[in-house]
Image (tube, rainbow, N blue to C red):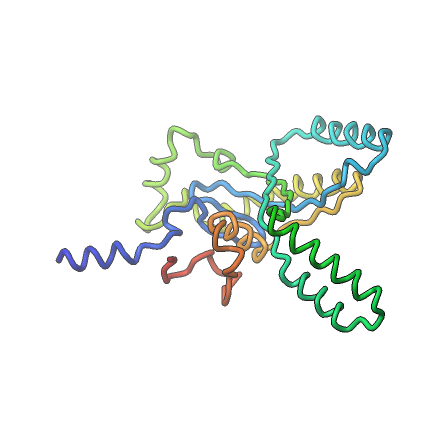
Length: 235
């Protein structure tokens, strides 16, 4: 008997400890019934702008934030940049170059990049905006969440207060107008803004929860139309 219990414990998935229930139609569904859409936003090299352009940009950005009647979350994610493929391309260009002067220039530039990478971490920053649909918008009061779960759920393993279909319908009705409104506002600043799809959302959360291994180990053979982890185990 103890051996069987130990086997069951070992088979536990990391997903059981994550707040994410599923990723459906570009919407992140949490285990408490709340949902979110995530948008990626391009950046602007603020230091290269003139003083007048900087002031205009800050004023326009402040106007957008002050005009919102719903909360948003701004996420900045930094991760190490893999420049090995870029260095390899430089080496190929160097080998193919027939002009001695250009060949030497490419060689010097390649060595400069190599030395820079050795001395400093090359970081890439990504910017995201998350808009959330609260579980309270489902009509559940915070003090009665547990009672609602017990009353509405027949499946003991299911943690959602309502069915996925019902939650998704309510979340889409709330999130889609807000998402479209944000896309119009930020596009006026000259920024590129896109909604993350299922694959991009799963990749984002994989990098977030596997920061050390995400650079060298990529997600493979994932069914992006299914839950984040379906069966199996995570090491």
